[in-house]
Length: 66
Image 1: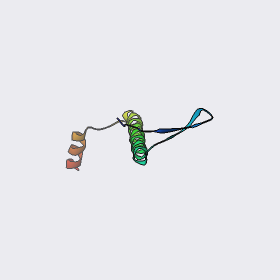
Image 2: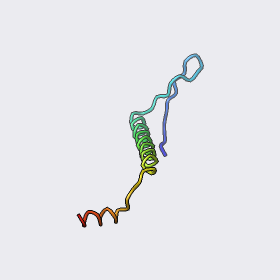
Image 3: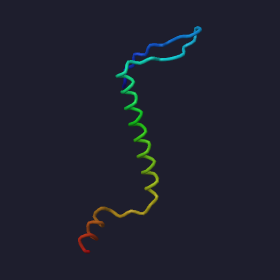
Image 4: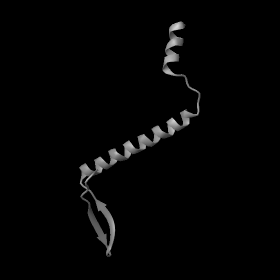
């Protein structure tokens, strides 16, 4: 889990912005990219699960016999 050290900027008594050290910002970007990749992988697997498939052993057998 990321440990963040934000500095909160206040304007007119209301929180307006959170400022992070650059290293923490980069770590958050990496985590978000990883999460997006995982989501895309899961979506692709779901889409592919409905398509017919051959077991690897059968593909190897067919390649050997050709």
